[in-house]
Image (tube, rainbow, N blue to C red; front, side, top):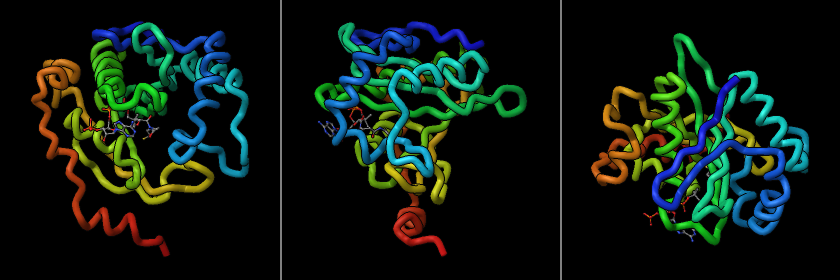
Length: 214
Ligand SMILES: CC(C)(COP(=O)(O)OP(=O)(O)OC[C@H]1O[C@@H](n2cnc3c(N)ncnc32)[C@H](O)[C@@H]1OP(=O)(O)O)[C@@H](O)C(=O)NCCC(=O)NCCS
């Protein structure tokens, strides 16, 4: 069972998702439909997503099984988005993958990079995870800015990797290991000393991502 903590930096905090978040989350997701749908994970063969309450219960089940750490993002105490560490594995791999979204009305204030840094630092120091990755669609310019701000290292192109917005989509993968941020990711972010060029994507991969798979 993963105990998901509450973590805070300034006016940004993250905390464990709860079943009673279903109502405010449903409203946020409905209000942000057009903003989110292009980037939202979907289930092959299904055109509608499960009800929000079912999604929350499924995330909590995964946390009980040590597979995920699902967080709500709050700004000034108001729910503004979600961040989840999924695909958690321990032992020789000790790795996980982070996904996130934030409401359009709070975008552009650096909330998500701060939330990611809080969660990654906890994964490293509280959970014993060694490596975290973030996979992003080539078209998602805003999300690609996040990994640059955090100085995450580009690892490569994964073809037709995640089912997003109704189809299998290519993703660029970025990662950070605990050895790369001895003082913590949040400290590095707030100091503004991340090496953004680590997230540079080679032209060959940009071209490959525009070329259909045979
Ligand atoms: C990607 C996302 C999480 C960024 O969160 P955020 O809290 O706005 O992050 P930041 O404040 O650091 O902004 C990141 C970039 O978004 C862009 N941005 C800022 N305000 C924006 C707005 N109102 N609308 C669109 N993009 C905006 C800017 O390029 C910014 O980079 P900059 O600070 O260098 O100018 C958010 O845009 C989002 O939830 N998008 C929809 C869902 C999604 O893409 N999830 C990630 C899937 S990998």
